[in-house]
Length: 603
Ligand code: DGT
Ligand code: CA
Ligand code: CA
Ligand code: ZN
Image 1 (cartoon, protein in one colour):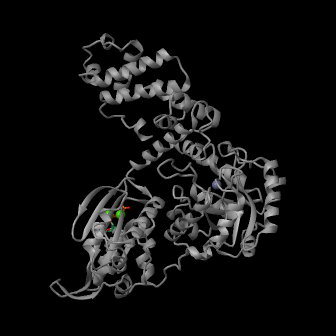
Image 2 (tube, rainbow, N blue to C red):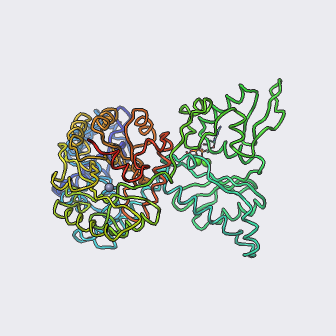
Image 3 (cartoon, rainbow, N blue to C red):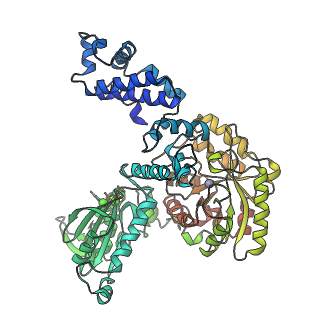
């Protein structure tokens, strides 16, 4: 939304003025205002944008009566002057107070006009593209007057296209793509050599691993870096450039290939000698900040490191002797450091900790025994209760909590007390038939604007696990949110606060939660904070997790799955937890179910 307000104190070109008028027209259309008035703003916008001279200049010089220009009436002329003089327009501002500005983004989607936007807002309470995406993905948009399934697909496509242009990519998307490419590379030789079986054996003799921000598990990825060591490397680069999803080949050399995929993601592949694979992996994993600090340590010790290895330096500062480089481990060892896991390599104190041999024993995927946040077809999930439980069991989880939405979240078909009680019965029945996994009866209960919970205590007390979250009134002040949380957390049934800051990567900033106060409240009331593993959430983030850890705030890692396949998102949560320096002991759902329930009990 930054582009709505960016032009204060700057030159106002015709385009900027036109944009304000177009937005006024958009907002009036959403409002259902007089069509003639809307038309006059649109006309004026076109006239201004295509006009030969700068309106700013015309206004400042004052020699031309703006109203003499065809398409510019009295009202518009006044507003042009106002915009040139103040950089802003009151009518525009007033409309933005009345109508959520994020609706303008919805209206820009293909297949969505002002009427649909208004309907989404007024009838369904949807104000963000993300909300539209959820509805469309759940097949709930098609029933909206006159839309149909085809338009729904078109809208979904348009939302996906929109994501591509943002420059960075979600960890989840990048990781999946990287794995597809690695599988593809390992599956065979380049197209031109058709010697399927024997060649397959040959090409398995190379090592290919992701490096860069992907290996460090950052929440967003600029480009994917892949490192390859082995023989027959030209063939590997050839095959790489022939990956079916490639849109264009950016570079194709002897030791390096670079491609842009149809999704917009760029992949760099580098081939290195086995002897320096560890050094190259260390170098291309980064981060740059970590590597800089590491290099300066090496220098002090009389070494130098680069992507080829660690070398001893003579008195003249020249490379003397190759000492290490085959593995990362031997490089860190030479530098008298504990091996530093990639997720910690951000120069946030890891080198100092490694020197003292005090690195955390980071949590691993296999440590997580339960998943405490997931949805079923009862609300906005795509899989049934049975399917979710079965999928969790087949992934080796020891327990799951079923946490469907509550009635205030109408877009997700949230449940009232009656429906939840009936789900409780269903779960009881399923529990009697199920072995090998413990099913916890839960809810993801909305915290209403004033901090009250969306369900009555009489039904909350029948549950094993009450997860609460904020899904509305995102624009409250920090104080209002603190008060809201204080009230919610004082309900003794509340055990977990889900996606605590509400941010959605590329979609929505966090609400104005005061994180320090949140941590204090969580500790005071013994409420666990969730690390939500959805790639677009990863909320709490790595920095917050580390603060929470240092302050002794209990954490759980959950997937918030809306489908069986999303149970695998747990790995993104664990990566983020590792970036937050978390050990198993900081994460309550690394405990077996009985101990877990005891640990989160509030009395
Ligand atoms: P990204 O792609 O923006 O998500 O972040 P990275 O960390 O993957 O950065 P990228 O792709 O530009 O480079 C991959 C790694 O290569 C980076 O983490 C460290 C290393 N690297 C790149 N440029 C430099 C450099 O100028 N100096 C040093 N020391 N390392 C570099
Ligand atoms: Ca990268
Ligand atoms: Ca790169
Ligand atoms: Zn949820």
